[in-house]
Amino acid sequence: MTQRAYNFNAGPSALPLEVLQQAEQQFLNFQNSGMSIMEMSHRGAIFEAVHNEAITRLKQLYAIPENYEVLFLQGGASLQFAMIPMNFLQADQQASYVLSGVWSEKAFEEAKLFGTPIIATSSKDNQYRNIPNLTDIQFHEQDAYVHITSNNTIYGTQWQEFPNTGEVPLIADMSSDILSKPIDVRQFALIYAGAQKNLGPSGVTVVIIRKDLLEKANTNIPTMLKYSTHADSNSLYNTPPTFGIYMLGEVLKWVESQGGVAEIAKRNEEKAKVIYDAIDNSNGFYYGHATPESRSLMNITFRVADEALEKQFLAEAKAAGFVGLDGHRSVGGCRASTYNAVPLEACVALRDFMITFQQKHQ
Image 1 (cartoon, rainbow, N blue to C red):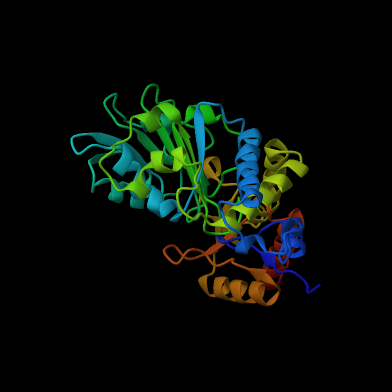
Image 2 (image 1 turned 90 degrees about the vertical axis):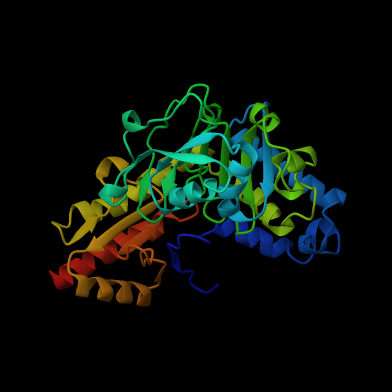
């Protein structure tokens, strides 16, 4: 087999090698059907079993209570930016948004089309280097909901604990850190996540939604944009992204085989520490974008102090087999995305490359 790249892409991102190999073996003839799963009817018994098994596995891995629905949708997190206010924000209502990066800004802007979004707090003045303090969040009892983004891929920040919003529904975009560590799903009324970072290939969006919130949704909206449409039909109202759901199910099996979410979290901490230590021990040759208390375990953002050397660093890293280390176009610099499927060996290799590069150029 050709040497696999050290894949630090921010999304679509690395998938577990075991999952890719399993999919390769099953690709042409799934369960002796004589067909690929990509060719099967989504109404057939074989795919329906795959679909339902994926839902069950996610519920088990995240200890999702019975009063929640798990939906497999399309359109990515970006469609959720609009679907959420469309379903839960009336024209005469307000909702609070915590701004911690570009994606929360985009969600905030979409909400303006349907009601009145309020900025509960923001770390934009600090170039989104930190997650806002919980004590600074100003939401209101009359809010339709409070929206947060749990991990910020562009800036490399992550919530370490979540706000207690009481009776006000808490909604979280967890696209880039879902299943990376244990959470208490009961803290949230709705969680949504694009699959292409920790759950599988692009094309599937997971929504975990509390049933009492679902019952309060607006009804005078297009059928396909109602959460109830998909909840009532087990996410099979129209043709779903069948291959993506199959792959998501295989990734969930892999998470189970690794010891579950708690074990994955330990590995993620170990992986991130390897690279953060290289930054922190470089005497300023490298420096991080995020403040230490807000650092993400999923997206490690950093700069090379010498801008000319930074371009050389990225070029040499690419030549050495490291993929996806360029920072987001809006902020530049470097970014290593260490999602669940990125092996420790890749992080160690990056650390060693960073140290060697520093030694050559200091």
